[in-house]
Length: 286
Image 1 (cartoon, rainbow, N blue to C red):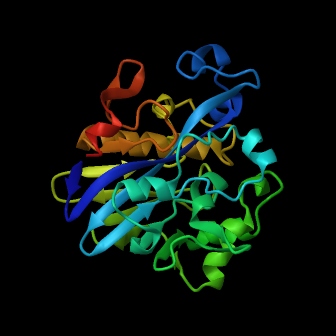
Image 2: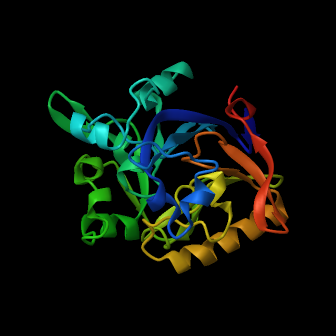
Image 3: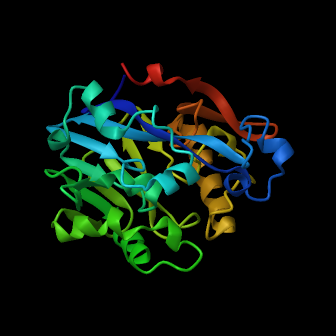
């Protein structure tokens, strides 16, 4: 368990899934990325669905919600969803929490593997999973999600976010700055428009939830950029900025999709940015 400011911080696993390894690493050859991420017969690699849980200052806060439970059996098979890897509500229950205890949900962006658990099926209707919570997302990402391009429309599924607006639970943020006390957003447009990178900080330390700018520890290397990214050269410069600060200021980086390394401190080595100290899940979660 880590304490930053008023917040106890834990990492939750809300499932496992699989995506094409080539898409996850873009122009990087398979001979390089497969060393740490072996592919299955469909060229997919195993990925985590990791959620940040913050408790303190009278709040229970989640950052991202995984894929949820609304996928059809066809899509579950397509994305290699592991039924034995748990789900977000079970992970919360293991922490002694129920859905109605959650006061705030910060969504880095509205792709299905980050916002899918924001809503659920209840009596045949798609409704917000966390009925008492405010959901925080950037206005620019909301606008993009509502009118995506043909290239990324399969990642923005309206059932994951439109019910939040209909229920009056959505808070649209206008750019960088503080979301809640001690929790701020930095905007990243390389992967998708209006992604917010969440930083939890006090006067001594910072934790950064990297979302899809650095989805795994392997993506610390600057050229390792996902083929999914809309603006890969923008991602390159965004990574350079965040990693330079992380190394210089000793930030703890949380990797949302890395199946083996949940979080790490980084340094700049002879071949670029690299893990200086990796933390296991038990290093953050009591």
